Amino acid sequence: MSKRLLLSFALVLITGLIYSQNEIPENYFINPLDGELVLAGSFGELRSNHFHSGLDLKTQRRTGLPVYAAAEGSITRIKISHYGYGKAIYVAHPNGYTTVYGHLQKFCPEVEAYIKRAQYKKQSYEIELFPKKGELTIGKGEILAYSGNTGSSGGPHLHFEIRDGNSRPMNPFLFGLNAKDTRKPTINHLRAYPLDAQSTINKGTEAIDVRLTQKADGSYQAENIMAKGSIGFAIGTIDQQDLANNKNGIYAITTSLNGETNFEVKMDKFSFAETRYLNRMIDYGLYKDKRKRVQKLFIERNNPLSIYTQQVDNGILTIEDSLAYQYQIKVKDYAHNEVIINIPISGTSDTISPKNTATDYKDFVYSDQGYNFNEGKFEVYIPKGAFYDDYFLNLKAEGDKLTLHKDVLPVHKNISISYDLSGYNEADRDKLYLGRINYKGDVYYSNTRIKDNKLQINTRTLGEYTIAKDTDPPVVKASNFTKGKWMSKYRYLKFEIKDLASGIKGYRATVNGKFILLEYEPKTKTLTHDFNDNAVTDTKNELKLIVTDNVGNSTTFETTFFRKPSIEK
Image (cartoon, rainbow, N blue to C red):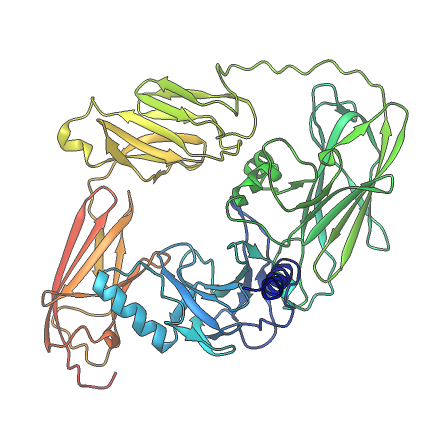
């Protein structure tokens, strides 16, 4: 290769890298639905244990609306699950980005047939496929799928994402998509925090709620704060667009002290590896106790989030005696609607007696160390990095019940809980499981395994756990047919299944000894077979359905139905 050719190749490569890293194509992707974008959820919205990774697009409370490919590309991943995104499809585009479409009802005919073949081959409804590039292609604006309500969806909508070449979700608004929005963000809460033992706010050492007054121009004026030492603020805020009243997330928050910017958070892009650090950014204890979600405008240790775009001293304010400060918070949505909060702060020399931090809790953990605790028949292993801070823990066992503190501390890594089974008969052990006790006293199954004569679970939620027993098999009921019924005019075979203790784990059905595919919807506790699969070909059909719960109890449902497949459905 000549030097000139080598130089030209290098320039092309560098130009491509610069483009891919710095230039976002604003007119490349189109709206995947007909009509205007109407949001049920925004990018970066604060959710349980994670940031929302896309846009939730309203579908008029309906399912079955056409979902269009946002750009031409190749389908590289299809995942069908009972939970999460439900039925989801991933399209890789020539410009290096990938779009994701979740909670779908079904796919376009070519893709639907491709998936059905794979499901019948694996004999499983839940499946994950990775077609080769070029195997399944789609054109821009072509129907890719139909909207639904599958997986962990709270109602019919389309979950839509755009990911970069490193599989990091990006804000679709960056690409020129937009929702009509002339409404300013709403401020719900302002909270102030003394950040060490020597710091005070209004003569106290505890976090306080700050009273706000809204002015005629829409801005907010906070009450004057008397403070000393290191302090920080947190804010509770939402955004709403013109066409829907859903309480969506904020795009950007910027703070300044005496006119100088000292902190900014912006929802442009993040990685899935960091998303759980949301629990470090919010006041987790306040959310669990009061259901108020506020995000801190300062950065504490063990918080590596990449969404912080500016910061001075981690956003922490140092307040000195006799000095006056003007702290300002600007909250902005992507359409540049903005709300300002002005907070006057006066430095004071108040000396406060150290608060009594004595506790009856005997167990103390450092976040950078791992620990093994033995409490009665329970063993608890807390790995290094499970917590963001150092804490005293309320850890105790009373018989078959374990108190693992209270769910007011965020847990980042799995804590392992084991229970010694030596006190139980061999015959009983297979029906036992470890479950978490909710506030009503109900026990919820945790994914339990038996190893080395112990029940074991992993959890990232503190609280109370106990041993539970499930000897009752699942309940199975045919919902649209009875024994001996002719089903020629029906498209679907439907069942209701439920398990009141450990929950449904699996199911399998055959007709005349041949596997048939069933689709499980946990929200409605239904199983459905589509006769259009053409798996049922005989007139007389002996059906056998086996449903199993999480500890191995099973129910076998057998019946006979009749059908003339030649009759048009």
